[in-house]
Amino acid sequence: MTQDELKAAVADKAISEIEPWLEKDTVLGIGTGSTANLFIDRLKPLRDQFKGAVASSEASAKRLEALGIEVFELNSVGTLPFYIDGADEVNAHLQMIKGGGAALTREKIVAACAERFICIADQSKYVSQLGNFPLPIEVIPMARSYVARQLVGLGAEPVYRQGVVTDNGNQIIDCYEFMIDDPVAMEATLNAIVGVVTNGLFAARGADILLLGNPEGVERIALR
Ligand code: 5RP
Image 1 (cartoon, rainbow, N blue to C red):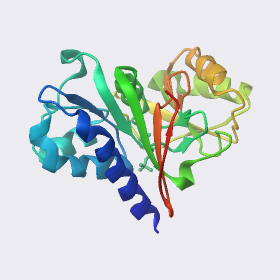
Image 2 (image 1 turned 120 degrees about the horizontal axis):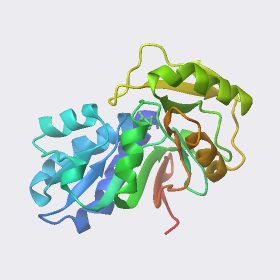
Image 3 (image 1 turned 90 degrees about the vertical axis):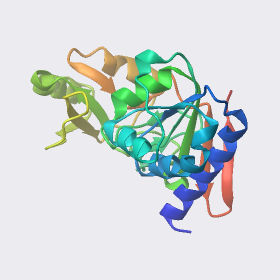
Image 4 (image 1 turned 30 degrees about the vertical axis):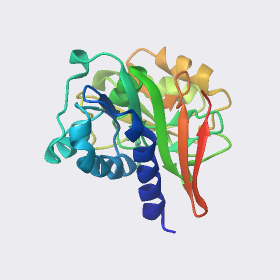
């Protein structure tokens, strides 16, 4: 199976996971990226079974609206029953690196409001240690060089993601050569650097359920 076929399989599985819980007032939290897009596309036939969605990016919001799914501001809704999103890396504790699509801040905010985070990923994303994928950090533009120097001090090789402006008007630094021994501690350390808006470690609040696609099928790994 190709990677795209595996992504499609986990998107299908995520639909099966949430469909029994959909009610007329359900608002779903929806992530960003190619795997999340496949999930969004599969929501179209279900659109009359739930109220709408909160999106973690302008791109996902546009895709949802194009399918006739109403998109709500997060501030206008309460707790979301589910947040469904992909990942760049995920480990056995369902801690993740996210932000390859530069949507990490809104992803983390929407995930924080969700009762259950369902991570959908093909097997290439499953790792024993986070860090081979360069860890994204969203920074306030004027702080970029300062933050980069702090990242060097922590052992990373920071690289400015040229030409990318986040939905929040900020910039992204990617941390190369930065294997992460303690994701929860590193997430907190990075958050404490002045000028950092968000880092792409989703460890303090990881996923609750991982739907992992491999050629034998979709494995469901649930921690909570
Ligand atoms: C975007 C993300 C995505 O979830 C992550 O990059 C995975 O993307 P894809 O499903 O395209 O592999 O964090 O900011």
